[in-house]
Image (tube, rainbow, N blue to C red):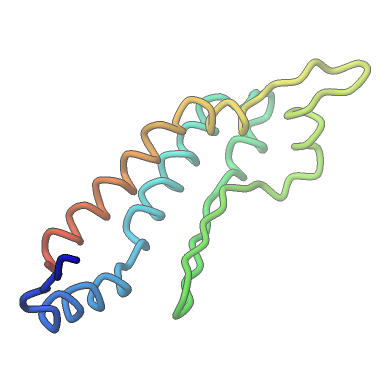
Length: 119
């Protein structure tokens, strides 16, 4: 039977331990800002109230970061999903669909950069 010897295991464990502290706030803020702008560009405009109400919010804690793009206009859901008399206008879902790959790449690039700098 063969033997495996790992040299500098303590050093490897130390480097891996540093990876648990990767902060994802920057790519989350960039992604939410991108989605907000995209949703605004797709939002139907009559008075401009819906478009002007779209905003984003990023929340951080010790263990996670959460981002959301939203509007508090009461008729927003009817514009997004439609009704029996109003066709759907996918401004939020369309923004996400258009930017999904860009957002994923922002996170991938950020994580790769962080890993390189910590190891």
